[in-house]
Figure: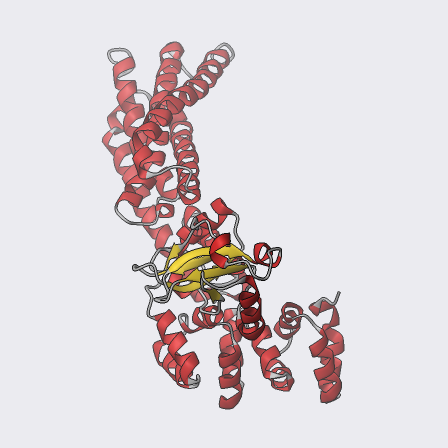
Length: 460
């Protein structure tokens, strides 16, 4: 099996030697993904040169595996006729993914290069809402009628199946195009030629709606373990299919966005090293500034309790311990809930069960940390006077404060994603740093409130 980058020196040598015939023959031997890997390792001008040597159909297949930025760069280096050939040969769903990320003026110019038939397909797919399943489906599928025989279906596949993206599943429609059922090709092949399609139908199928969010497609594929699913409109008419390769791309992109947001930054649009430095700074600075402004409230809270700190300086020793414990517990809870929401393991209707569970978890976790803190203070007090003569009361303050702060952290971290989801926002926006910042401020208030109760009349 050939792997692209391993042959990069050989390709570069052929380019330098201007041996275009050998270069073309060598590139044709590669699988499209490996050929794209080779092109990515070349200089932009060499990439365009090699691409011009390839047959149009192969060039389109390879083009679909090239990174989006390199696709745009390559289009600028090709003649208009070559660009038209590539775009017309591309799979409709991959072409839509490219067109929707280009500036509007460029997209219109490229659509004008398409044949009337392909132009109609492109405009139809781009007409669906951004982020919807309709933009990722392909209209290249095989549909059959329920009154056909197996023999007629096989003959139909021989005539029209070549242009279908997949034939593992065949879709049964009525005269209006309404989806009636889906049938596995295996079941047809193993049936007698004179058997009716209707005899193989159970009218039990799973379909996606074209206007649904793409995350819904990922969850549906995971649940039903399918290689392709039909896509219907609001009237039940079959308008396309979504294949598992596109869903894998969607899943990777959604996971990438969620991980970035959980980390406290806007999602990068490309690989780390290929992202412009200024763009990366902008995406990271926005959240850092927001979090920094939130942390300023911590200073405000400490200023409010300044007199208590002056009278009981020992309390200041445990401030980092208290607020970090609350932030860590909140981050844990937020991560668990965000991931469970994205996997469909929980829904908004489960909020009360989640709240009860997280309150109990917070009390237990806080008690564990509080016990460790209590023992640490009481044991250390036997060897040092840093905690003063009332070290037992200080230890009790830390114990109770940790229970309160950790419980509040888990409650905040679990409820914020659900609240955002209820408002129609991305739960990943309630990222771990955001939850930690919120809990830092409230944690100080809980800590000093407990201290005022426990140490009142003694240190405060």
